[in-house]
Length: 276
Image 1: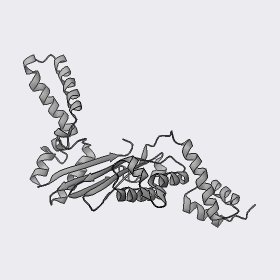
Image 2 (image 1 turned 45 degrees about the horizontal axis):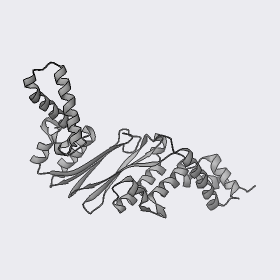
Image 3 (image 1 turned 45 degrees about the vertical axis):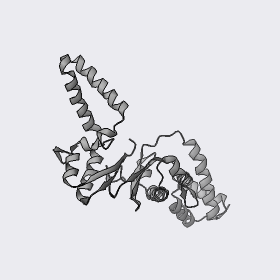
Image 4 (image 1 turned 90 degrees about the vertical axis):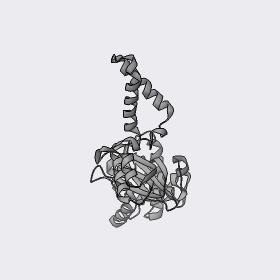
């Protein structure tokens, strides 16, 4: 059996983040060869990846970067436990994944996973690091946001965890303070669309049919139905469309009014919340 020192085990564990027993066994099997032991550990982890394929990934982080060409990239990188999510290895992996995805300007998860990253692809990079981390890791969402300027807001729901809610706001105008405030509003209010015109017609019609049914069951006069239904449909738009929403800092104003007064035009936005 190879003479494996505690120092070698400690050094390899710090490099890879692997367990004490697995690290020692790999070094013994590799006759003390660090490089060979690393390959043994990666191979063992890769086999574990397949076994973890059906596990849920409800933890992780969001990360974003401005790309410098009228675009910005937002990603959600997911894992199984908050223990891994807050570790330096996972956070460092997220930085590497974000850099590669942003460089490719990928607009879908599929394109992002196929993008070049270090010695392979983003997908291969994630699989390799997942093997070492010992958990299922996946790039769950990617969004390329377009705009003249950007405000990026990353919110921590716990001081012990990396950002769990991420917003990228694309806008035109010179009021960066208002733009940041709108990005913070988005993180809280979770709009799905920019304007009411952006809401898919089928979603509007489904909501219209629902509120009409509710209104009829309430026994409202038939002549009053159209006005009541339109009013309730307006409340629906205030829930899902950013510019229709009541501004979080002053609910007497709409977001649309706030950005208009500030000379800001919102062109695009994206919001990710880990696990949502």
